[in-house]
Image (cartoon, rainbow over all chains, first blue to last red; front, top):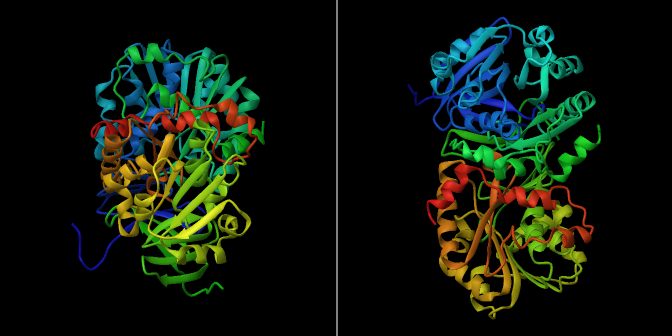
Length: 291
Length: 291
């Protein structure tokens, strides 16, 4: 219920203290200090329900299709033979939902460290979380992704999707050389790792992008970066890394095979795939500075 | 000077009242009600000096390179023989600055309706406005762009760049069929029109994108749209229209010729050119709905 004598705003700061994006809150749905992070779920008229972890907006009903298209479909277009998928994080369910659209995929293991995230999304964000009750190939585990990958057998997965928070808080270990090396070992010969690659515009994000790229570049022979327009992430544009032992995201993409699947997507298409990997010069320079 | 007991924020609303981007103000440089609009210039630590017209952020020192690269270089890559350029609006000078980098261009006519914008940018934003004192090919006129184009001779220009405000206030007439028809007449056979095409994410912007596209599509045989990541515009992603009598922005682009010029750019490159025209599905659907 809206009162007339006050209003409530959620603001995320993009620089230390002088740039922020704010969403007006119609309803506070859930506030919880989990064992891992502060979890908040709000409703905003424009963005619908959205989830915030430790003060960072993770997912909104309105723009989640962009992020979830881009974490999943580019890799599937490069290697249509992916059978075994590991999702690390991704507690809202949107990544699993997109992966599950491929009939050819046999197993989806998902390791989310924070069960509270899943439970809150089950309650308040069915558009992403309904996959939990509908998908028999999905094996959801509440565990530490870092430990899980360390203990997983070599070559067990064709695709690893790191759908984590930023490199602070519970996601921190997922931005280390040790983790990337474990991913390399656990991936099959044509395996692909998609990881968080942060932003390229604000100073703090640039530093994280450099660190992530330097570490992945040391670990994988092919390590590229691609971007996408998410209005609720800093600067409106965010990046994933595409790392592989053998497949190049541009040269080895199979647009005809992907288009033959007939999947309807609101953001991704195979022309945009190439566009997403065609980076602005200033982003290429950031990456080249650590290569 | 920063005081400790207060702070000052500029906020631009992206939806009617429930989403806003805010920049903390270090210094109010200039506030003026011109005959055409409210003009404000502020300084923010992250973005540097920025200009606001009628409450909408137009240009910031930090991210202006994106907008000015993209309003100019894609067209120049498609037609390297452009000699005569008309800029409508563009009072900060950034568009003229980029155009002036091409030695092959013979004449740059610029028609800005509001002299106060030019004077304020000369004073506070030399990175864009220094072109006014340094460029002999630039002919700056303070006049109504709508009227100027109506009265200009047929075939007078190879390139028209509409660097205007949004379709409210003084820029309104630059979003009409009559204006687009005048541009068509004034352009040479291989002429190109680059115009404001607004955003594709928030409802109000989508409506303006539809209106602009429907009108241009009726006027020009080739009418495409391309996007770019500007952190200070709504959703972080904004669009220009590319309209032409004869040249297609993808099929007719000349990457080798453009790259041979050796221009250094921070955002644009010829791969990104193709990427910018490779639109997300939801944007393609918005455009198709009015074609």
